[in-house]
Length: 277
Image (cartoon, rainbow, N blue to C red):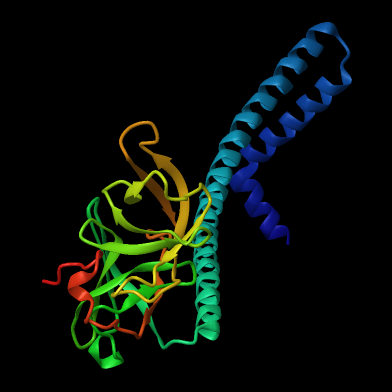
């Protein structure tokens, strides 16, 4: 023990003496009440506090930066999880509606998923993951729990292309559910409209529009939309009835193909016959 103390004293005595003198100085400063020493003491302790504050801020800033980085990372993970849960919730609601539709329908329904969409201004179409192998044929209607989406236009073994209602080449015969008045509805590039409607025909805003039993390519009473408004009320002899579709074409992902192809006997007399290419 003595040797250790002797070794430390012989090698570090300058540091011991410095620490001792500093302690004596601080004790002397704290015990002396003279005004000059009090000023020195205030400046010393103030300088020490300022330096400590700077180092503390640097350390805290670095710590906060690391903590913020971790929090941002965690927020990003949570955002992705919430987004995924929202998508699951939306899909769940859509699938519930489709299940309800299938349970209440008395006609064959073929479930399908939309694998691609082409929704330009004039030629809207969907590609489905079902085809001939599932019994899908050209001319079959496509719908979901909200209403009519379109008609199957082309079919391969495993896939099919649907010409949606948002297609200027597709016209369908529809009926006002309340007044039972028929008309031809089409997409004009910006909205759905029943065209060339005599002013004497009874259409009112809010009326439900369904497919007509006059149609040769669609079965009757499939929901289409509601009357949003009337145009050309003051000029001409015909009105144009603006329709709001029940279907949100941008958000639709799962559909049913109605396994019915209407008789072709009236095809060339049909007002809404579409050109198959």
